[in-house]
Length: 389
Image (cartoon, rainbow, N blue to C red; front, side, top):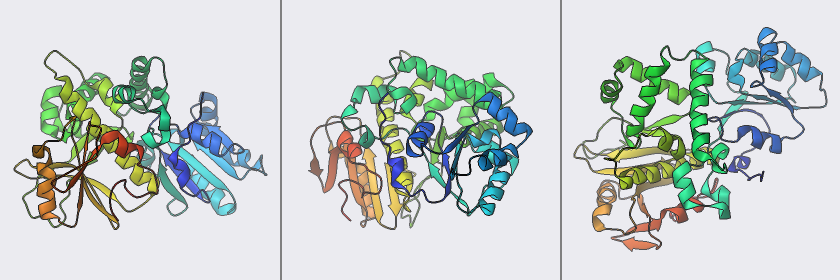
């Protein structure tokens, strides 16, 4: 299988770090390529997990048994969270050791209340592929249909793989770990919340639709976030000049996962789903760009009480950009209403519209770009494409 160079490589590796990301984002493959000489401890292997659960001090024996190895990788560390206390001790005992701890869930670590190595290990995140990582391998239809999970991206049977991927989380991460009491309720919740993709999150409505208590829905959303499967995007409210709504927007972390979970029927308009998919694809790229660049940029959206909206706001010490995504091959002036309103309130901001056409346009002072052109140029530690500094 061809190895694709990831933009994870842009951050320094001199100290210990956590590498968090959903299953299938390529954490293990990247680490094995980047640190081929490391001592690798895989907690997804049942025998390895059982041994370290029974005797966590075995970790110290393994480390001392390889005195010439200074990098130790513990894959899926949340499976045996008690190891973190021993990792802390070993780092203090030998400053030359570097521990790399991967995880696809923060829930068990938080629930256990273990020492998260504050100040001794930084946190890094791994995301699905970026278009700038794929380069000439870019296939628009394939990406919009199946998403960008490395585990799925090059599969000859992506729909079956996505189904197996969801089942993996339901069975291994949720059922076996005892995160929910009723797997049927949670499965209905997953289907129901898929209709919230790219929308303002209304937990009461989700509760009614999937017939579980609102408090339970809130807990289920927390599980998705702890398993790194979803995010909530806050409203940009700094120096607000208009009345704004307060609720967050909801997104699954990958468009392929969203498509698989979203039921489809004869009343669904393909254009509506395609628009949500494109918006989600842009969101996951912006989020990855921020994490990989390790800058102080935060991601928001903007929506007034009257319904005027901008899909994404990037705000930081060196960036203030509003981005609207339109699932259209043409730019109409009506498409620019939200960006114009935002520009009125924040004249110091810059505005971009991403659409499905092929030409770069300037309409009413707003730059309109083909979405794939923008995403292909979105690269870690580089300025936001087409935005003036």
